[in-house]
Amino acid sequence: MNYAIIRYLIGWMLGVESVFLLLPALTAVIYQEPVVLAYVGTAAICLAVAALFCHKRPSNPRFYAREGFVTVALCWIVLAVTGALPFLFSGEIPSIVDAMFETISGFTTTGSTIVADVEALTHAALLWRSLTHWVGGMGVLVFMLIILPLAGGQTIHLMRAESPGPSVSKMSPHMRDTAFILYAIYFGMTVLQIVLLVIGGMPFFESVCTSMATAGTGGFGIWNNSMAHYESFYLQGVTSIFMILFGVNFSFYYLALSRRIREAVRIEEVRLYFGVILGFTLLIACNVRDMFGSFFESFHHALFQVASIITTTGFATVDFNLWPAFSKALLVLLMFIGACAGSTGGGIKCSRVVLLVKSVKKEMQYLIHPRAVRVNKMDGHRVPHETMRSVNVFMVAYLLIFSASVVLVSLTCEDLVTCFTAVATALNNVGPGLELVGPAANFGFLHPLSKIVLMFDMLAGRLELFPMLLLFAPRTWRRSR
Image 1: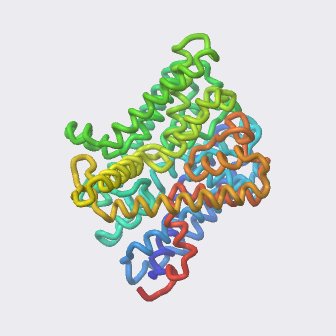
Image 2: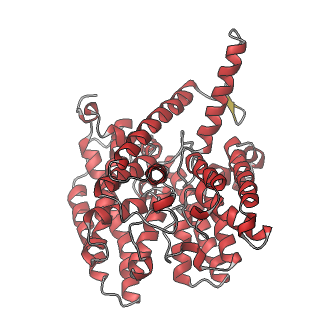
Image 3: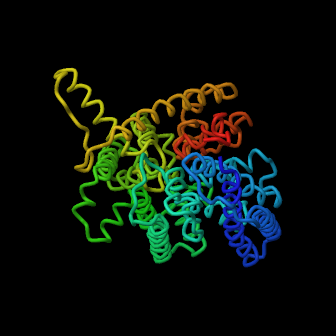
């Protein structure tokens, strides 16, 4: 284990975070809010620790998969601790557990909140919550790869540990260029949404917060009733479209911008993703038709909620906890399916769903024709055995963590639907659940033990489970390889 490079990378991450903390500090100055010192002080602490960790460059800058996974997991934990300090220093969230929960929910783009009255928060706090979504959506270490030159070929270990999905493909021969391309697309789409929301009449500050929360598929609202505050179908429609767009594999955009349209269209998970959105929207729109004045209105709200849940954003235009059981069951199913790999969304991911279905189909064919030789293919290419193995192992680990979490949360929460959907939203980074953690409620009433379990689930879900699990493996920390 190369501890020196891990320390060095954590230091750089804290330096990057200190810069981001200046944005809510500037916001506090603009709106003349007294919390400015909370953000400046936190930025100073992050910068001081960064200087301590980075004052000496490691003599051996090379690192491998183990260091990559450990670094990513530790960086996200440190992000959560330092990111919670402004809430504690300002007194807006005085509880350590609650401040940690809110910050982890932000950085992991979950969007579950413990704040009962969001509108009582300062502009600085609202911006910081949304900014954690934006930074966490693409990944702070992916951003760091743009500005920090590392040993050639080693950065792939950080990308694989932080980027959601069963695999990470290079858009460029150099991972640094790939990181730049990802953030260029990400930033461009965020700015475009801000412009469109401002054109629709949304104030600039609210447009920035909403767009950053949408881009990171996080869903922290700046109003107590989330996007229902904006009665304009245009504003809600723009948000629906961008939630869907940010849930698409970013490789699709790279191929499209490179004029490789045929390759982009052949991506199977993207086709499944749009197919599920359309199918589930129509089913729910028909099921809730009697609750709205017209089919257009029911379709509009159904599309918004389907887009919000499958992309694991978590915005809401209505309290879908009041919808029929059929519609709620479909939304819970969407929590598990999730968005595309290589997007900012959470969940199991459409690519894994495609591969699991293909695996089941192959096994059924094998039972009928035991001697037949069949190969799983995706997007016209053979799927390596290692990929199928990783998908199967992921699902086993996923089910074990999910089951254990439901049992632990149920120790302090008697409502099974609340326990089940609270864990589902945390592990899949969705945000709202059903019953006591529905879109019109919050997670503040939960016992501290339940919040700690859900915090682990949020981190594990955002980092695809294994970086967090490796922290508990004794062999991970051995110096010898």
